[in-house]
Image (cartoon, rainbow, N blue to C red; front, side, top):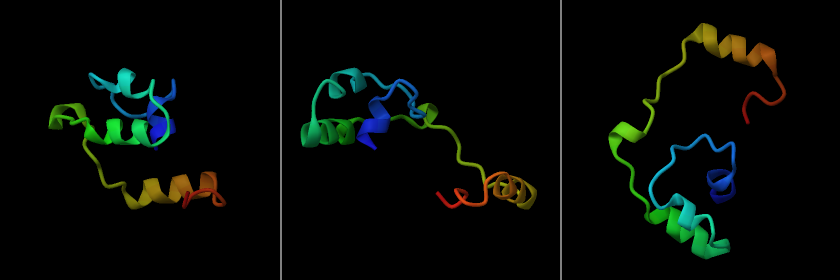
Length: 67
């Protein structure tokens, strides 16, 4: 997760301090990222997909759907 957090195509919101954490390596990076706090406004709302959306995504790629 720390690798994905610091990647250019990271799906996570940018947070003050994340750039500093991403300069660190290994366990230090993980601890730094874990110490960051996000407000509720910065995090996207998690929506439950409809049955139709689940079926559509599954039929697009059955093999990797669960991943």
